[in-house]
Image 1: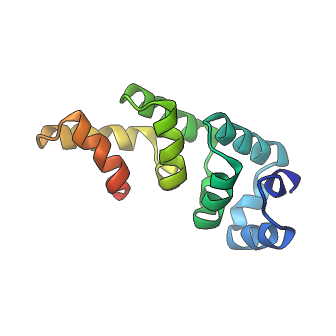
Image 2: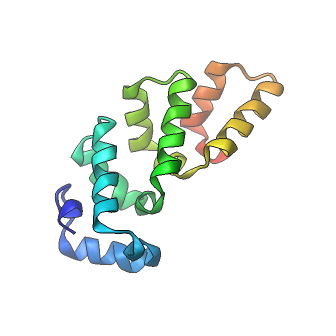
Length: 130
């Protein structure tokens, strides 16, 4: 649990997180550590990671394929690395969505007449759509 403590979680908070998310214990220490390194690689600060883990610890349960797919989709959609890091800090649930689901939703919104900028705004303001 050192990697979780490295972002500022106490041992009690780590234990609480593992109790609240039973599937988390099946993830290897290496996998969880890699997740934190991946998030740091997006440019997310430890303070933002800590806040995100308090608000949405489920993001640790998401497999690397899903996270990577969404980041690639965000980049292809025109978001900068700064915007992706900000989105992770503000809307971590978006990083647990399957890329195909997000693509389908964006296509549906485009068919309804939303332009790319409007869809980008919806990512931030209404992430539940995706």
